[in-house]
Amino acid sequence: MTTVEPIAGTSNGFHFNHSLWTTTGENAFVDTSKPNKLSELGSHWLAGLVEHAPGMTAFCNPTINCYRRIGQPFAPSFADWSCHGRLETFRLKVENGDNVYIESRLPTSACNPYLVVICTIAAGLDGVKRKLPLPQAFTKTCHLPTDLESALQVLEADTVLTEAMGAKLVEYFAHSKRTYELKPFADFGKLTETEQFNKEKEFYFLNA
Image (tube, rainbow, N blue to C red; front, side, top):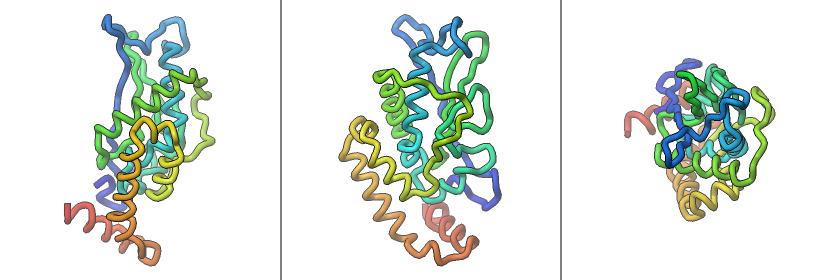
């Protein structure tokens, strides 16, 4: 359960740190001649993550409760990035000299890490294949989905992720979420905030 208490800033993330390495054991994200030492390949990869962040949200935030984290202090809100920032969805980190890697702050503790890895690779590879330009750091123009149904709709509309993940997998994932999670919460809007949270706690925590 991502948010176990209705207190702002107390949700649990599942930050996914990664980099790409060559067959000769070199970090493919590193180019010391470039700004922030990020190589051209790394720049396109990061651009792909930013491009597909809204579509990735459903896999990275797979429960209704997860969306209590979106938009909270020090949690993702936009499809954005920065170098060593604490508020952006993707953080470019340069440590120990030339150690360059990306931290994805999009997933929550309720995610399936295998699906997170797959959708991250799919998004990054699309950026590399299409040579997507990396937006300016701190650019906050594209909001992430703020509820599960919206996230599922964005995922279904992302043809790159759907093709890479497999149309059947996406179809089954969306169907199971709508049938076994969203449907039981159909009366959610009629409940008070306290009643909503208690229902989430019973559904995701006490009955897990």
